[in-house]
Amino acid sequence: MKNASDIGRVIGRRYELLRLLGDGASGTVYEGRDQIVNQRVAVKLLHADLLGSEEHLSRFFRETQAAQRIRHPGIVAFIASGTTEGGRPYLVQEFLHGQDMQQASEAGALGLPEVFEIALQLLDALGAVHAVGLVHRDVKPANVLLLHDEFGGLHVRLVDFGIITLNESAMELTADGLTVGTPQYMSPEQARADDVDGRADLWSVGVLLFEALSGMLPFDSEDTFDVLLQIVQNDTPSLATLRDDLPAGLIDVVDRALCKNREDRWGSAKEMAAALRRGVGLA
Image (tube, rainbow, N blue to C red):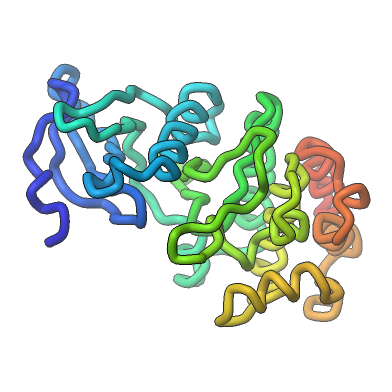
């Protein structure tokens, strides 16, 4: 097993790595145990072979900064960060046990009430991200974790701040020539490699809602650059063409979030959330 040699290690003199949770292009996430307080944690560790990569080190550092900077119930909580004796940076966050929105949707576990609740909590979390001048840039179902409390209440956590940005170019290219982020959820300005602001994340929430309510993505292709071309050049389909049974106010919320020109979108996460409440009769 890749990275199995790390299991059992103790980093930072207190965090024992127990098992592998996920392995990405730049880092590995483990379930860990804080030996001092006997608490489960999630530990992200940069791959050893990427220590010489300025790009990956910079991205990891940005994620760590973002984790420390944003304090909100809907954002995965920061615990600690540091560097191992071998020079590998690590990030410790709260351990979250639950399905992500993509898994829940594939399992048929999301009805309309759940979709609305997820969207409202997600927008509230994004409001906190944007309030400190950051843009997440990779809002997608796989980065929206769904937790349930003992009373059955649903709680959303937005995760993975690895490509968060503050006044930076909206799109990067990896050594393999692939875009950083998930093309199907990228805003037109991100697809064009223009500067982005919080309205790029609102576009992504619009895509998330469009997909959850219709079962389809507004723009999709097996080819990454074909998706980006569609997002930039093609007209955005209206949710009404697929779900004319939905309230007009709800369709308007999604359609406006997916306006090509960001000036025509909702001006803030708070404004979009208020419109969503009105659109589904919660206001």
